[in-house]
Image (cartoon, one colour):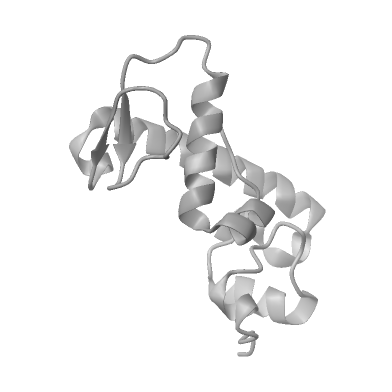
Length: 129
């Protein structure tokens, strides 16, 4: 598993942080892959293994689809753990997506260190209902 924090996303941008997470995930593998499939049209600049970018990859490749499911399960588990530390945000059910209840919690309580300050409503000061 590789990850990038909300702070890294704010500093780098979502694509660069995703690429950083990919590099981290590959670096943690015990066996170096012979080839990587990347979901999308851009690969990390520092990717040191042969690779192919596959637009719409999760619909075209079982490997990409499986990796996408694994990533979402890990993310959901992280959000469920954060929900116990920050119960006001409902992360156990909305997983931090821009659901109305989540926006209402941001308005009432402000962001936590786990919120992306570059998220448009936060960055643009548009947290009103």
